[in-house]
Length: 214
Image 1 (tube, rainbow, N blue to C red):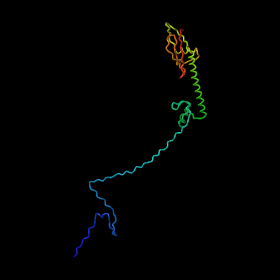
Image 2: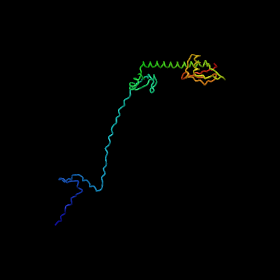
Image 3: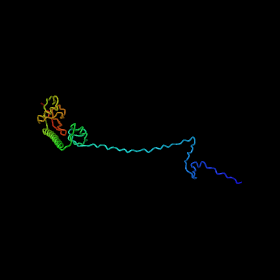
Image 4: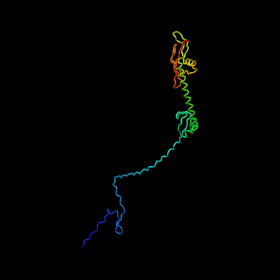
């Protein structure tokens, strides 16, 4: 009798991800997770989400409104009286104007400031001119006589002071000078001595004292 050949064994592990449909076609049913070996640890990778960068918008700062003002009084930080300076509106309104330090620039005010400035310049020039005139008079006269009591060998009793020089100049010129502005040497005997007097910041007068026996 003919021998019977058994059918081939059905594949198992290789076809586990497929199933046979009634039409004879294989369909995908899914993969089976591979078994993990004991004693091995799985590494987890942390994925950081991209950081969202915000847009920083900086608001525009307020621009200070400025104005020109005229200083009525001297200010150590701003300047001298009559100077035109630029300050903020708020600083002028809250400080300078209430304190009477400055006024707004106007045509009328500028004319007033110019007039005051011209008067001050004229007065300063007149003061310098007066000091120079006195210096010229002192130099022209040259010597001013001071009388003093004299002892033996021409030594005077006491000393000749700045007030003595002021009195001597007053007698001959009619001008009274400041004794504190006088510079005279130590005088202890009769003779002629060189002296100076500061008549102005820029003017120095020179004269001579002729100390004689009274």
